[in-house]
Length: 185
View 1 (cartoon, helix red, strand yellow):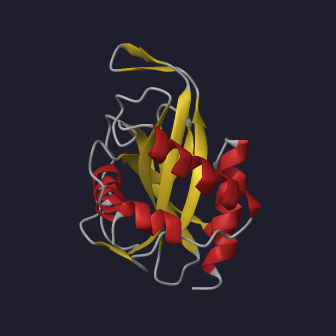
View 2 (cartoon, rainbow, N blue to C red):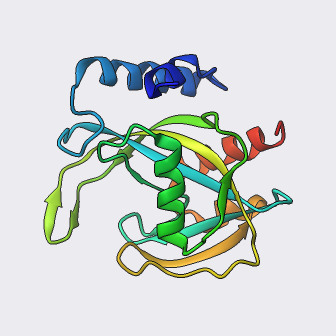
């Protein structure tokens, strides 16, 4: 199934996801470069919310740009296989070797704001991440490695404590939504 069909067929969990799905499809329909960072206004990213087998912990990284504990993910950079991107980012950012999708279906659609920041010595203007997220699973006993280019830490966090670790108010709401959705898996 193509990424556009996958996004179109995704059934939103709530009003936020419906509105974000509409915005993501609008961007896909109106920008030819939405899968690359060439689009400085909005571009597709793919993220993984990684949980352990018992689904009572999530693996998070301490993200340097956001200065907060966060889920894994990154830019599609032209790759329309968004599940592959989510898994690649999860392994690169955590050092995990074995990350698998709980489902190959999209777990969440979210439009996320990114404030202007310096990256690799260059200013990046504020923009939108059109996030296509997947629910991933990993073994919490597997060795973790900090990717010092992007993060200052990686660790398993109890799902019910995510709001204690995240300093991003909007993302706390996203994580709460994820944790509610996990109950149906």
